Length: 280
Image (cartoon, rainbow, N blue to C red; front, side):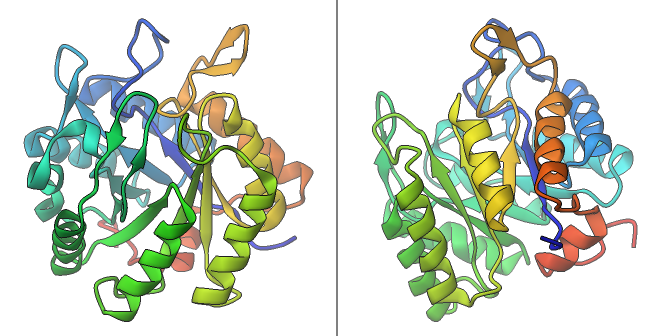
């Protein structure tokens, strides 16, 4: 298999804290340093959340601005993807950082269950977030927690709410949502190809111990892979991951096993139809 594999590193998220793993980067300075190590290890997309000083989730545009500035300086060319996830805020505060014009932003197009709550993505908010991304020239990454979310992305694409071919990420292994099921995973791939074309790019993310499982499925099936401390703080049951870079290294090893090159940032931008970034 010769098509390059894009590695996305989800550096922090909204839930893991230093109690869970001291390597989780909380401050902007820690996030930039951790991302730079992951970038040098082979990651070309940074999926970013920000935190308050007490480690609680935040959607503060000023913190996102500082993080974006640091990443552009220390990880030139890397694709910056902001999260608009619901744990970091309510309503339109979830998209308050979009005027900063990151390369990409996550877009959850439907609701589903999480371990202890409903992850609410009401239609009016989904429409507003998509409109903001379109206004600011941001490419959405559709986070599909369910088959219906892939079909909704196709509907939004047809309606012009998503401009380019949707880039869908399959999220599997969240308790009470879609488990890591290989038959479902394969059907997701078939659905993306049917709706968006046989060459449409897609990504996969596994939560907790399912991370390495989904990494392997994605790499071996011609997709792109997400890893990082947001989704999984361990290398195995007994070993904490020492860094985001260590989790990226597991994916690059899988790429070598399956004879797939790791995408450079230039290749990643080309595959996703993005510009050359602030470095020109």
